[in-house]
Amino acid sequence: MAALTAVGAHLRIPIPYVPVTLQTAVVCLAGLWLGPRAGMWSQIVYLFVGLVGFPVFAKGGGPQYVLEPSFGYLLGFVPAAGIVGVIAGTGSSLWRALLAVGAGLMVIYAVGVAGLYVNLRYIVATQLDAVSIIQLGLAPLPKDLLLGVGTAWAGRRLQQTRKYSGI
Image 1: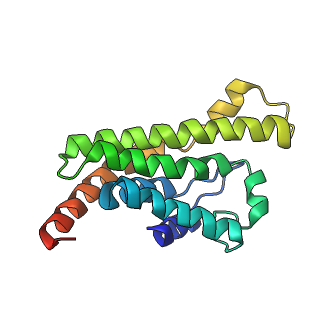
Image 2: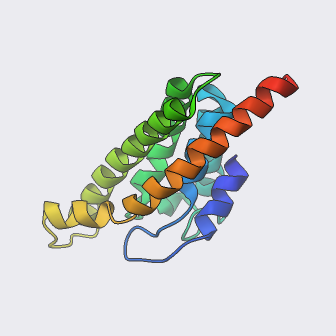
């Protein structure tokens, strides 16, 4: 799932500060399919590989990436995968999977928008007000909500596959 998160980073629409990617769908899928612990570890591996210097993030990689405006979203991936896994449980219904994905997206966006605010105000030192930064940070949310429905459905199907195969 760490590798799929990297692939999702490179399927993107570049917009200022926060590119639109498929990463959030993969993060939620990691929590649904792998469960909370393995889902979180997949995202920790993803962050580690990117911070070591492999170009797995949307704009490259390396330790300097912590200064990117979108780095807060990446930090939110770890707890989001865990929360999705906890809420979804093992034999979740589609509604529970949808709730889990929604909660995961809330975590990603809460951590991401907070990180974006800190970055734009104190590192980049823009003159944007808080409302503008929040609007900018939430720009990809409609796409993620739409993808979240498909992610919940796919995650539920993968859970069923895992249950029947003994994984």
